[in-house]
Amino acid sequence: MCTPLLLQDKTNVVEDYVEEYPELQSKLLHILDSWCEPRFNIKDITRYKPEKFNRKMLSKLVFRLLERFNVDPALCPNVINQRHLRTLKYLFYKRFVEVRFCIVCYGCEWVWPKLATEAFLC
View (cartoon, rainbow, N blue to C red):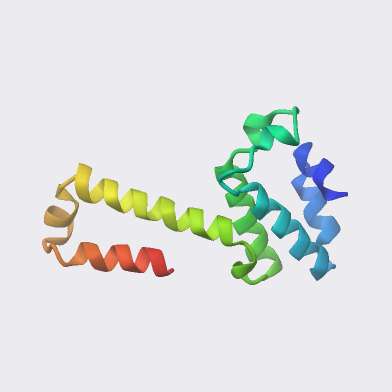
């Protein structure tokens, strides 16, 4: 029932609908997490503005719903994994493309491994 509403960009209606039902919240988050799977193609389920359903938008929605419903983040492994990968990608970019990241900002080469480890474990 929630999928057509999500595809019509009526997330506020979906949030209100599942707010009092923890089981529906879990199912909704599981569906959204499965849509964030790397092999999943959103064009398979919608022809209505598929560009609006990119992984970035879906992951923001999932994290907002996780916070709102106070659900365990382990329920959404794909979204959590993608966030860790994006964080590591950013840190690698800062470290190897913008070399000044460790030298100028922190003044120590030992800080970068600590940041990378913390980003992955968060």
